[in-house]
Length: 125
Image 1 (cartoon, rainbow, N blue to C red):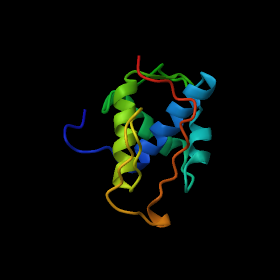
Image 2 (tube, rainbow, N blue to C red):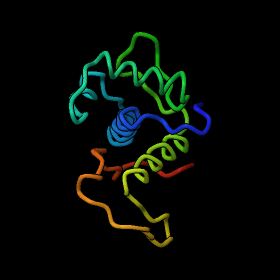
Image 3 (cartoon, helix red, strand yellow):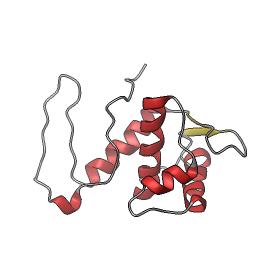
Image 4 (cartoon, helix red, strand yellow):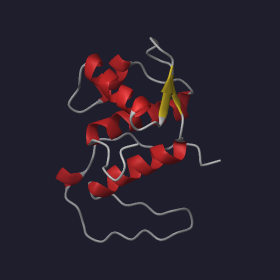
């Protein structure tokens, strides 16, 4: 874990792409797919570096050695927390189930992150 320091925004974006794809299809995306979905796109090598940090540093994913599509979510609650924190840093707010949506200030279009929607994300167990 990183302690009190938040994860880098690009690494959280990689995490969001992985979580969304696993939730939607049951299969993690390969590094090339993740790189293409990033805005701006990044290389497979850079994606692998982000995934390595999510596995070994943040400890939110597990991965089989040498496999590009073998990412598994280790800690869904921590994944949600990291993504929600990053969205909050960028001015996004959401309502908890049965809770009010309270936004302290409006945000501009430039503050909106490029993170996929989580329509199919399963709830915590």
